[in-house]
Length: 219
Image 1 (tube, rainbow, N blue to C red):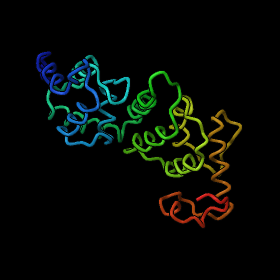
Image 2: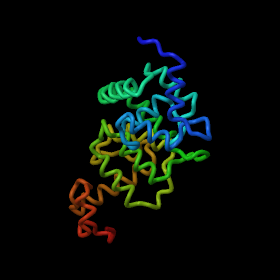
Image 3: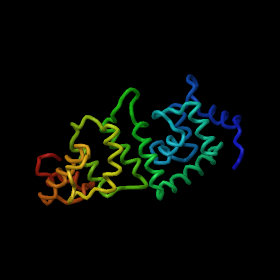
Image 4: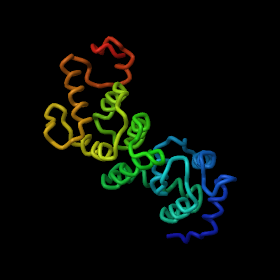
């Protein structure tokens, strides 16, 4: 593998570093995304944050950036893009690797000092992290959450268990005696109610535009 020089990595870091703070912040990350030809909310940028082991959104520390790129074996914009493309491809087939990314995403989305993800952030991140691995029930799950804005937030065990739930759950034979988080019980109950009311199965955009579909009075 190529030799990566500290000097090259530092120069790359300085290119994006915030003028006031010793870290790459929102503006620098936007410039980096632009150079990489990605949008900041692209799946590949979540993958980059994961590979840099970034501890929070909109911020790469000097240590995270330099050590992360060393681990990636990339020291240029083109090199980073190539590694990201390779990793995204690998994530499509490697479920263990995907699980690592999935678990990382929860901590990455937390606001400093918080232990649960806000519902809005959880919905955004679920949509994003499942870009290459979309479970069949994802749309219905996110639709259910959007209809229940009173849900206070998503704790870590619910986030982590959702991956398994999404891969194994058959709503028609769901067993609520199993140790699933109660939110999953509520979701299955909601889906069964919808099925019994002959509401079309898939909670896609069409549903949200047709208020007649919901007998509970919600749009």
